[in-house]
Image 1 (cartoon, helix red, strand yellow):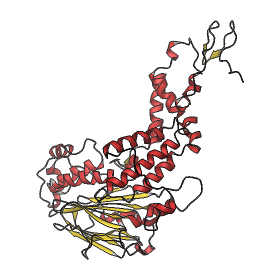
Image 2 (cartoon, one colour; image 1 turned 30 degrees about the horizontal axis):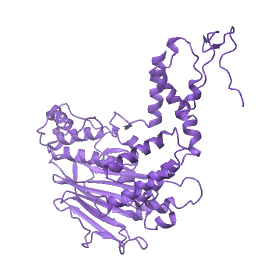
Image 3 (tube, rainbow, N blue to C red; image 1 turned 60 degrees about the vertical axis):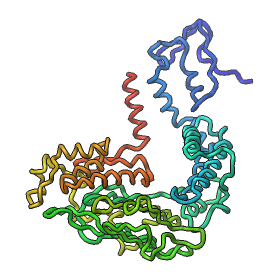
Length: 463
């Protein structure tokens, strides 16, 4: 049996480790057993009896854990740990489920049990993997929330049984049948609310005039058109009072379906009176009414797309999540799409994403053009919007801007609902929040940047 390398030489001889010496008369302590994220091997480098300022305190431990993020506990086990495959299968089994449909709880519990079984089979290889442990905790929480028993039927993860050509997610993940991880489709988000504020597929935030009818989306699978009307006399600000959505005919999955909503008429059906598309029991396109006359959702499983339409006050809001590869499937003649390319520069109210807020309603830049003064001051508008938002991100600023422009408190609810739709549909949490700046739009940094910044702060604290 190969002897473990000693950290300190024989008694009487000292050796410098990080400018500190191991006491000559104290033999090295035995190396700890390999543990979480390989900490055992790193912990063995700390010499017993070293200076107390070099001991493994809380800041040292945090720095060590962050440094070990890419060590054997994560990067090397990525090729062995199959937690990503387990998660992929779970998403595939639940992506088509709608919480408002019959049998949702039963099918969701089946998928959860399959997910739980998959994590158990890969538990040995995933020991020390943070993603794995997060998944295990998440499964336990979901089972409790949904009252799922651990014993019972499970969903099949066999592609031959679970895949069909009218399920976009399954179709994409089944393209590669090799042993490696299957590709995940990339989704995009677009939202329109207020007077109106636009969040494009590229996460650019704009406030525009765009009076009249304008296309938000126009590709080979989906067309969305909005009609905007002036909000107050003398102002260039507009808001949406009509939305038309066309789900185009697609193979054997659905015939063309048209949905149309106008102010005070938010139907829970397509214009032909139906509430779904597809043959038989397989409903590849469904409308679900969340709040009568106020909130509907459309789920197009065959193109992996979800649309949310709301009415707040006298105006409508819209939020869409769609796969990137389908959103990009359009001709050059269809390039006028607000979700794809944003508003034309001549239609912009904001200044490159920055919403200039007046100091008070009486000296508003728009009041000089003849618009009636807002009943809100800047201070009262801020106070009103702080009731809905704890963070002063772009949706908070949009709320303040709309109150100063229109005096209509319903725009506060519109901004809040638009933010809720972002959290429900936007595929990347690190990009949810956008902060307004004097120039380019700022985003919250992604996780690696946050980790790098935290490491830097800890390092400075240790100096």
